[in-house]
Length: 206
Image (tube, rainbow, N blue to C red; front, side, top):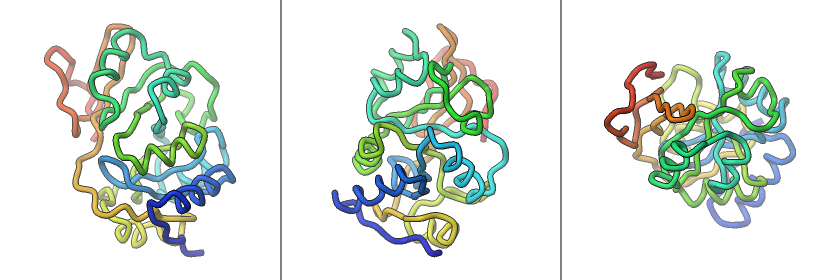
């Protein structure tokens, strides 16, 4: 079945949110590239998302509606909160230790989870409509370039997902990813947000 096309108006976002809460998978614009969203607490939906992307076993990040929502999922700690208050909402993903139980398929049983509060109002509204959380992996086949328009998503994933929210063309690069463990901060992927001096440059995930 071909994905339906939706706009960014409140009614369309309500339709998309309902799809997600019922186990669906939708594509939507973020402040970086187009993302692929499902309910992170629904293991079957996460599996469906992974199969749609033909993704290997890698953890999937979660977009949160607020800093408070993110703090319910992971241990941000003082260093994480410092980064959050400097860069959120925005294109910084923080990987931190889990505080709650989530489907193992989401984080591959690692005990860690990447979280981010996006700046894009459509992505934020969608996260709010879904109860505060939606997955935020890039909307593309694994190994292929990230999609920057609804048409690119349709060409890549149009027969594998339920809906595509058309928010125009995205021009940003992927989010910067930092792992925060206590006072230790490690760059896992360079992206839209420049890392601070003193943060280790090892373990880049391209």
